[in-house]
Image (cartoon, rainbow over all chains, first blue to last red; front, side, top):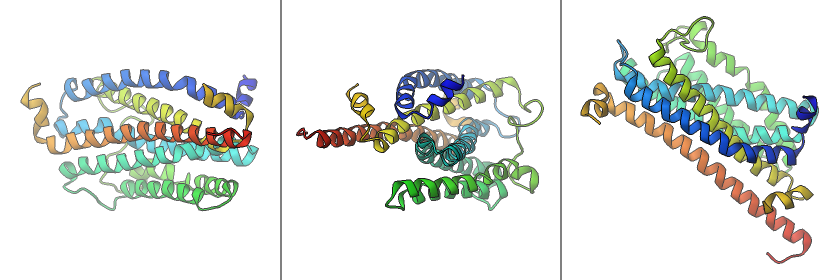
Length: 244
Length: 56
């Protein structure tokens, strides 16, 4: 098991694994998203309070969960890169940042569209919304900082430090609805105890969540391959990799 | 599909843009990732060709 773990520090090994995973991740994601869309849009009953507007949950919640998951992955990869000087960690962090930023934007836009009919406004300076907006700024900051240095190694280190410091915002986003008065509803699925919604609404949500996670996995694998090629351009293994 | 489905109980103006934006984000992610990988392969190929003195 540890041998396999150590192999994850090897760019050619990671490049090969990432390339092999992409079709599988996308195939299973298509099945999960297909089921989630049909069940979420057409089969799940309307909510007794929100009517059909609640169906926006099936894209909003996976986007929001992914915005936090990707940031956590980025911060963990940055910590691995800084502590053990594993370059693949910087590549994972660099590949994750634009993906996380896009899903954070998706969470904000889909939440805003859901908020208008339910709260009467597209935006409020609410703890959950504001901390999610700060998350978007953190992603943009990490990407900007990485590209602000002429020496890529210095850019990697600076971006890694910001990613690690910024991870404090992840629990703030998640618990903001508990710690402060918020327009936003509390946790429905990711919480201690049973989810507070019936199976006919919950299963499509879980399928969409899995689908979004698998798409993230596939996109991360694609971007990671590009990052490794850019970073290892002079390495011998790259010649074989780009021929295949 | 019935009209009821597309009208989403009167929330169509919010539900469908919401799904369209999420689909655009998923699509952009896949498109941009494939594009950046293709560009990296081209750059790596050029770098290898220059290193070995081959015209490319």
